[in-house]
Image 1 (cartoon, helix red, strand yellow):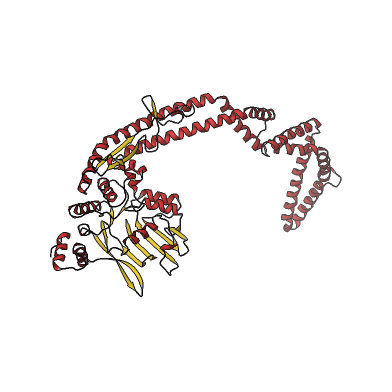
Image 2: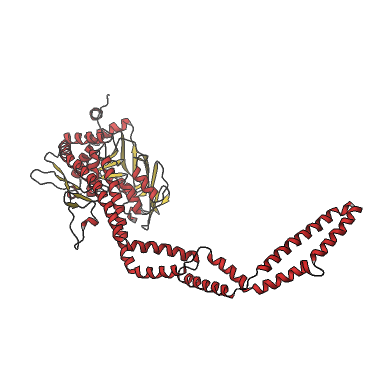
Length: 575
């Protein structure tokens, strides 16, 4: 619902801040007071186009801001989340229009594209009159209204689940078909690459081991000579380090017998001799196994050359070669077994299509069963609203699929009934459109093509009344709904609006006392002149002011006591 509306420097409006209530909100005012300006300003935050002409003369910019309660509006919350806009139970739409015609749009204080603001507006408000936000005039919404009327949410969800599963399978089939074409073109290349890589058969970590072994073999002479010299230096030479350390250890042991303070040094020297002994043993063993193997050296060089060639072709490392090998092996195997893969997937599609078709048929049957009921209900409601010869018809059609360029339709058909395949959307196989005639002797025509104005608003009111419990738009605005009606019909329109306001917040602009008298909240829009400037203001009326306003609507500007009494009676108030 619309909680509050703030307008500043818009046309004749200098500044207005108003809080609306739930139920039926009525706006009245003299002709030319600015009722249409108020609706135009509201339309701005619902995504309407903006022009510099809308900015109040002498001001830099116009501002319109609406605060909406959206706690139960799941579709709107999903829209906000999808556009990375903060989501809460309250929505703030703000529009700023500069005197140069530039527009800035904000949703919850986040700059937003006008298209997103318009989409949000379509999930918030249905504005009836000579305006754009008329959901029932958009043929695409008719199927949703019908499903809501019949409470078919469960069947719709069941069908959409099946439709989505089948769509995924069709996507896999398309991807497989595209891959088949690609792999047929690349099959020879993949076969060559596999043979080339398999011939070398690179192993994980192999290259590091080979390079380490190569380095050792290339330096075998140096390693042999160096280890021989070290063994002489440490152990076998005349003044070998090990022998010197043993002598030092023994002398320190003698000193320990005299002075215990040499004990720690003696241990350190003994430890050093032990370490040298271990180093000598390692060097001696290493020296003994130093290998001079030119054949092995050549093998390693050849192997590394093969790996280097593959690395240049397939990614720069042995790991990338192996990864490429595994990938093209799978692709090659798939290319060899496409018929089996396609057959397997086609069998899955046939089963999924059966599930989707059954769900679509159940949904379509239920919709057909609703037609007579909704037609009768709308005609009855139109009669109450003064359209005595009204006819209403919900048309439901299905479109069989035809071949395109000899294509097998099974490759894209979601639904099959009997021997025929049918066009399908996420809403099913049905195309739903409302037809109406408001004059005797005329055949019903598409609702989207009927004339605008008061009559269309009453048609909308009739439809909304029937769909009230299920139609989800939280706010309905009726402008010019009372054009061409009076007396008994005006009372009927008022009662319908009042009934509708139990399920939706309703804002109605009217000049009829029969409608104004039923308000839960009543606002008066007034035009004043001050210092040669014209201003429009909107204010909520207290009870006695409401009575006076209804009396004015009944008898004109001069209000008598009899007029006030008549207004109280019309409003159901006791004196």
